[in-house]
Image 1: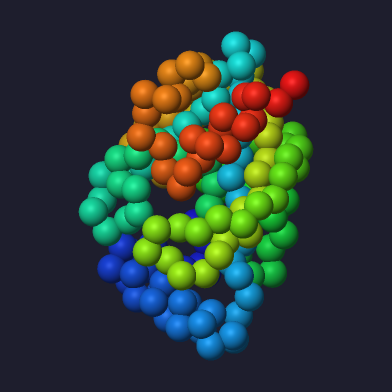
Image 2: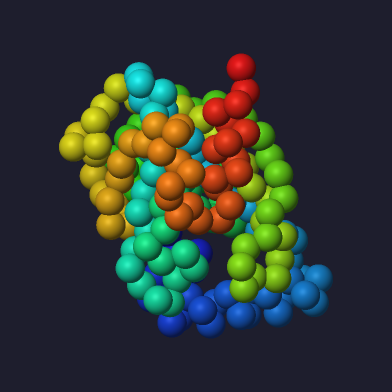
Length: 162
């Protein structure tokens, strides 16, 4: 884990509050986030089941891999770091797109950088560095899931591209 924000949920809530106050005062820019779309040979997408913790956003929801870009870190570096931290995978990633998104109960707009990568590994060959589980899903299975951060819309766009 990195040292840019606390990992304890209650300390993290206080950190978010202070961050928002600085952002509203114009002292810091919009935060950056990364999300990684990992596809296997069957064109299934790897999702992470978020922790069962009432103090985090979207507890028990499925999500793409990723997180916050730390200060003095590029989005490219953050995407690789998050991928390794959450799965143990080291993949060649391609930058797909950037868009602005808002997160529930968080005032700043997040500049979301999205990366794609492919793997031949099975989930049993990965580590679960964060969350409760990792699993590959077919495109047609996604609509049945509760997916965090409106990544379901992002995945629909991804699967509809040529």
